[in-house]
Amino acid sequence: MARSSRPIPDSRDNSEKSHMTHTTSADGTTIAFDRSGEGPAVIFVQGGFTDRSHPTWSGLAAALSPHFTVYNYDRRGRGGSGDHEHYAVEREIEDLAALIKDAGGEAFVFGGSSGGALALEAAARGLAITKLAVYEPPYIVGDSRAPLPDDFQEQLSALIEEGRRGDAVELFMVQASEVPAEMVAGMRTQPFWPDVEAVAHTLPYEAAVVGRGNRLPAERLAGITIPTLALAGENSPEWLRQGAKAVSETVRDAEYRVLEGQAHDVSPEALTPVLKDFFNG
Image (cartoon, rainbow, N blue to C red; front, side, top):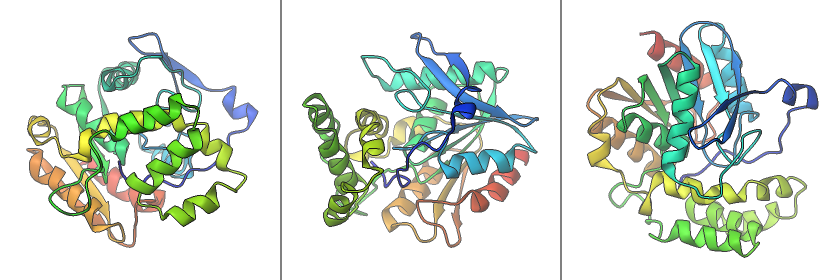
């Protein structure tokens, strides 16, 4: 998996939580989302550790709401959304399909990190996405970095089943996000760590979405025909930039852009004008 945005505690207050809107996915799972603004629908798909309260997503929603109807939702298993005992990537695609239906039957979509990989999988399966933008979907191409083990998802799941949620988070951060082990050890002593462990059960979902070894699914992506924008940060690791570029070279109608001064923890201010121009173009 990719380097994910820095995990932070849920900052929503009770009044914000009481105003959550919901839709129901095909398997009966409740999916929570905030809807704001007016205009064509844009749906956000988050990466690992984050939910709709994360400053990147809430800030981006506020910035784009004057121009679009923004759907900022919690992926299953986190935030205000429900979950199901048996996970499959197809269920998350059905979640996105339910949101598109709520949005009127078609929508623009923006996905970040592993959320970008999920959005690409949804587009490849023919969901009614009219334009797609992704930021650094964590595909490893060539020898840009050491590959993840093919059983990475199984390793994470085993730790969760054993109740070792902190160890699952550490494994993900060190191997997938390339956070130094000594830094993770320090994080485990911080007050926010219980909030990080609270979403540990979703980490195998992230591994499943990106696929074994984080390999670019070229055959599936080549079938995507909608306009697609693959973004990367100038200061991000080279392998993430190479992955985004490879997406642009694989999807038929795609372009690649590098955002100056940005890293994987991209700012809403950098994303807003780019996404506004792309979706309005």
